[in-house]
Image (cartoon, rainbow, N blue to C red; front, side, top):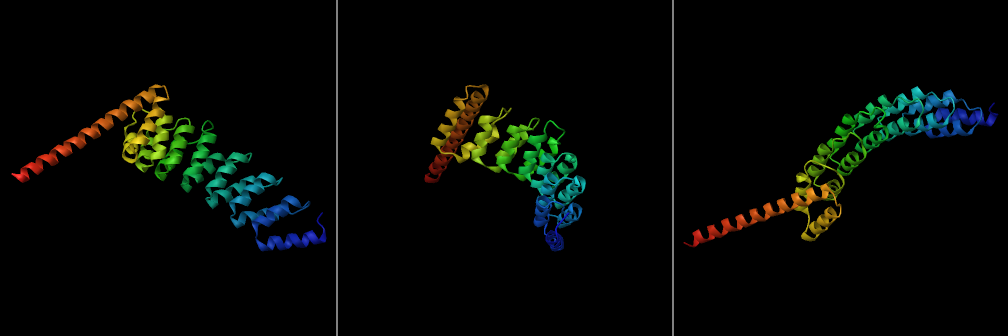
Amino acid sequence: MLSILNRLCQRRIIKSGNAKYCYRFARNVEGADIKALEEVVMKSGDAEYCYYFAQFIPGADIKALEEAVIKSGNAKYCYLFARDIIGADKKALEEALIKSGNADYCCYFANKFELKGADIKALEEVVIKSGDAECCFYFAQKVFGANKEELCDAIAESGDTKYCKKAALNLDLSDYGKLLDVIIENSSSMELNKFADKAIELYSERGEEIIKTLKNKLYAKYQKREETKSQSFGTSEELEK
């Protein structure tokens, strides 16, 4: 049973509508009116404290708190609720997460629940649409069933040389061409040599394929440059005549 002082404090906290203090009171004060405090937390729309309430307060209404988190559209707490709360509706939380368009937490969700019914294709589409090269690489590397080719196309389209190199060196692909185009375009001769050394050090078919494709592309680039020079030289001679 609450003391007179705690009853007064609880009344003022509930009246304030402050989700943080409602949660803290519920967690730390024995005899607190859990339902009344929970109601304030849910109505506040504060996904963080809905999650904390569901996780740490015995007797919390998990379903109602989950609905509040979903309604908030907060990707982080949709993911954490699915990950940590026993009895959470992972499918409903996944749908809210996909709708949020947050590539980072789509990656985390796919990695955590890839073997537990996660919709890998839908989560992957969010990541690809984001154009975030780091997320695309993480998804391709960590998630079972990921479409590595499409994810690497997105990495190449982003123009991010760092993650083009990471993808080429760490992922088995049928074609490294697009990644290598970006790498060649944005790297100095010294940087290309370092990249080639790392590919050689893989001692694998992937490394051999990278070196082969890299050589072909550099040779084609050299030929094109020479043809351009030759055409320019020919034009100069014609003008002199």
